[in-house]
Length: 527
Ligand SMILES: CC1=C(/C=C/C(C)=C/C=C/C(C)=C/C=O)C(C)(C)CCC1
Ligand SMILES: [Fe+2]
Image (cartoon, rainbow, N blue to C red; front, side, top):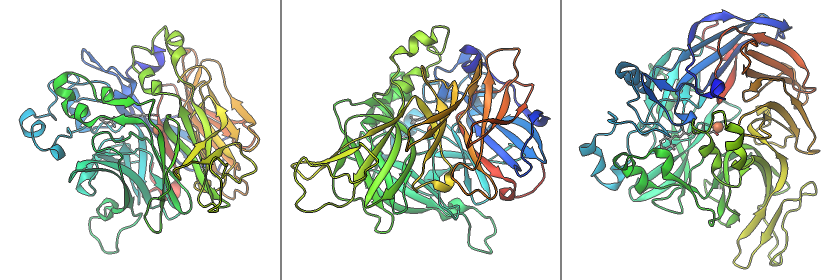
């Protein structure tokens, strides 16, 4: 397992031509851009957690049937400070570094509550975000880093707090059909309130503007107050339907007093997150037009989720699919000390990711009886029970067990849909398969090969696609057999048969998330 997780990967900033087996569809022109941790030790020092690793962006460029690979470490301030010091000097999710130059004891810690949030890392290792024709590497702190999608060069550091009062923001924004970005972030104890803020970054800027930056035109859409000033929920993504934003306030929470004192107590940020198994999980549905949270209280039992799959409305009900866990063991499992030879033994206690569907009615008759099920969707076993105090208790339907890193045909985002493409994680948090799940029939198709560890699958539609699964799946495959080179796999999304594979004779890292950028969305058509 060390082979896959703990090693430092060499960067290859110059394009390397891949060996193609099969035929790359001629219409496939563009760049698959992906992000993830690539360096886990600096000098003699080692990160504790896999989510701490320094961001290594890599890309597969598809051009006239050929594929070119390149990779480059994000030159974040964090990367530069670490390399210069030849040791880890900036704190990450699972590793507190001493002394961390970002944490000045006297200027930060003993001020007012609104000033106790420490300065976080700009090691943006989770995903790639597109605003207008700009691309950013993203994580969950207040910093994002602009990159050149073609050369993978690192550009400006952007601080969200300059444009919106959030201390944290998700690495999973949504995009509407015009390309506007919708994202959420948490504003901690600002003016005595902690809230979840929904904001929009427009895809274009007013004409004639000299230094074009979509972020300068960021607008706050609305906000939801946190149930607790000092214990806001942690969230990794959210959902959208045609008319609503779906936000889940889960009992996996950030403890702000702990966060503010972590540096002095000698503990990492991760230890400031805790799962409250006796609390409830609250659902919020924010009406995009009125910008109001629906007033009824909707909830389910305690659970932990990271990824929303999709959400939509049907017959006055909101349907949303999420990958759920019984507890927060996922983040625990990714400590590098567990990703070793006893990996299989260690992961036995890992709670299995399960795709669940919740169905929530938006209206019901005044005479609906207490205890009655308000769900009117014949195709589901999910229930929503009316309770004495007017709240609605929701119980999900299990769609599929053992999938993570879900993706869909994004043209169906917020709409009724049928297929999930995901990584299959049957026996551990590490993917061994690529899976296509039909949410209606629960039937699935899988791809797997010995010694192969697939990345999150990205769906790219055919140019004149008619059906939801008319397209291909792209996934970069890391191999644990030194005789087998890694490759980019292309599957037919309908049948899951192999279309082509492009093998690259370099070490690939297991990454997290990314996006396919069609050639038409790239500013210059150069390589
Ligand atoms: C640094 C830092 C954070 C980083 C979180 C990260 C890096 C999360 C990664 C999650 C992933 C990769 C999930 C996959 O499903 C927090 C806790 C937001 C807040 C404190 C500072
Ligand atoms: Fe994610």
